[in-house]
Amino acid sequence: MARVKGALNTRKHHKKVLKLAKGFRGSESKQYRVANQAVMRSMQNAYIGRKHRKRDFRRLWITRISAACKMNGMNYSTFINGLKKADIEMNRKMLSEIAIADPKAFSALCETAKNALK
Image (cartoon, rainbow, N blue to C red; front, side):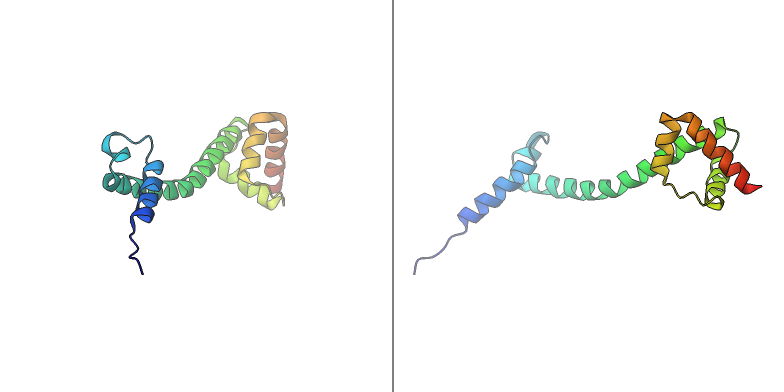
């Protein structure tokens, strides 16, 4: 039987890595060994970034809600506490969208939260 060489599979793997490294600077997009390290690092950062994106958006929504609450004369924590006591279950994303798009409705939510705390 003839000996099987790994050249075909190796070339396929190298092409795959170099395709992922497209757009990297210098030898990181041209030499396999350097490109492979850069691709592995970028994959790790992408994985971590997908987790961080969720944190960043939640922080943004909370900042927007807090600013809208201050315009209605209360702070964020008392607003959220008031909504919980009023049995209004709404996530922070929707609350921030309401605060931006419909300030009157958000003012009504603030009043509801204030009344629930009394």
